[in-house]
Length: 236
Image 1 (cartoon, rainbow, N blue to C red):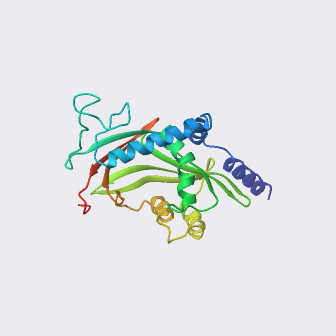
Image 2: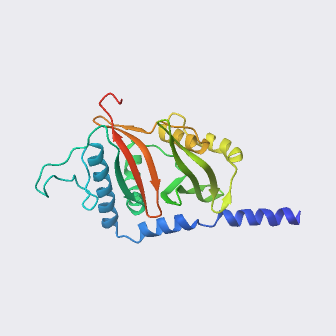
């Protein structure tokens, strides 16, 4: 019994540890003034919108690049070329901190109510996604880590692991509990489960005006590079 008790205390202690990557990502966001966070999130959102609209983006200004200088014509992207867009983790996490809650409140996206302070990071090609769990006695940072793989037009996470704090949780054990917490009618909640399972996904984003296919993703320590291609109106 003593050994079992010690094991339980050790496991609980490790669930309460904050992962280093999450601590850094969250700390950088909280170190910014609220106005600065909103401005950073707004710049990221505008860059993504401009990129999806078919403009080549100036990496320094985040605005459409122009032929012949700042007063020239904006440069359009050809539909038969792959284009890169680099986003820093600080930009992404400012958006997750400032804009995502508004999207959730407006009903555009729906996440389980026990998920708070969603953050992203990465290193050595591994993508990290975590959130603060608050559900009864279950508290801590729950996070997913995996390597983005693009094959045959599909995307998936390989070498996936799930942890609470620094305690690794076998998905076979956590999967049932997670399934019970999500709303299967919500696409974004099903997506989390599919990512955990390593299920291949079609990496295409549509809105009312644009269609973009993600063809690759390079995960760096300070940023992520998205490689994408514009699609025709019918998504081909």
